[in-house]
Amino acid sequence: MENIERKRLAVLVGCNYPNTRNELHGCINDVLAMRDTLVSRFGFDPSDIQLLTDAAAADAGSGGSSSVLPTGANIKKALGEMVDQAKPGDVLYFHYSGHGTRIPSLKPGNPFRQDEAIVPCDFNLITDVDFRQLVNRLPKGASFTILSDSCHSGCLIDKEKEQIGPSHVTETSNKSSSISSKSSKPKAIPCETILHHLSSLTGINTSDIATHLLELFAADASLKFRLPPLEVLDMFESSKPDEGILLSGCQANETSADVTNAVMTGGKPCGAFSNAVQMVLKDHEVELSNKKLVLLARQVLKEQGFEQHPCLYCNDENADATFLSQSQE
Image (cartoon, rainbow, N blue to C red; front, side, top):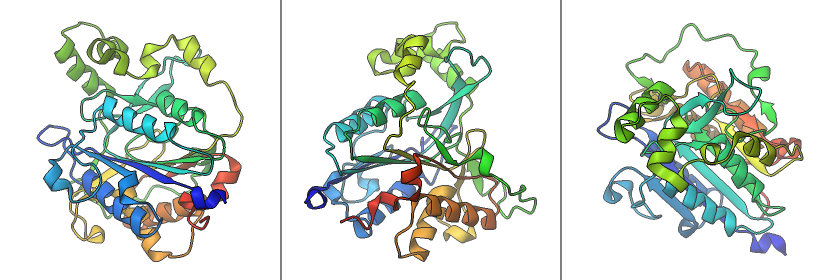
């Protein structure tokens, strides 16, 4: 009876950062393609898919809500509303295609660690702590799958268990890469670049990125910057399994590619990882486990010459669960 009541909810975010030095070209294409796949293959109702892009609404196509800009506050609001309306058995999905970054860790005892974040169009960073807080709010029995096609996206859910990641990489680098620098661009903005941009807006002379973000965004800034470090640490000490599932485009220390003109993508700009996932889904009409999907996407990227290794972070049960609970209707 619960299966009949199951809802499928999605938030899709594509950031191309148009007319800036950080411009990408395939991110909106990525989420538009995934929206079609969610409806046609996974049974999502178009009205339950919220689309946030930094393109004009008319350019984003029909369906969904394309007029909402993917600012940090808007993305977190959409995700928070999705989690808050979730009930046991519901399937939640967040697809992000855009820049990622790494920032100095605020966690005590880790002075040389860096933490992962995504970069909304207004540079109001959403961090691994924010995603951990969202996962912790899930009702028991609901699942929350995050696919992040961005640089440094491994470990984007703080403290989630690694199933496929750095310790699982056995391939050597592909020295005969078929992808030239002219046809792809890393989806990363260095922390120093973000700091310079934020400093130009605040006029404050400090290298502390938290100071700038709090000055500009106040209560809309990431929890990582609003809470004392020890309080952040205490909030996420629990090691019990949860229903967060992260499919990342690369390891935390790697970059993901934005492909502007490649033969294997039909010349259409796209994210290399998002495109690999689409290729795998089209080639395998049967249900796929989260682990199998990531391993097959890795193989596609390796064959195409990309030096990025998609990862999977989730509990042991969800590693073998079907991607987006496809067969559980």
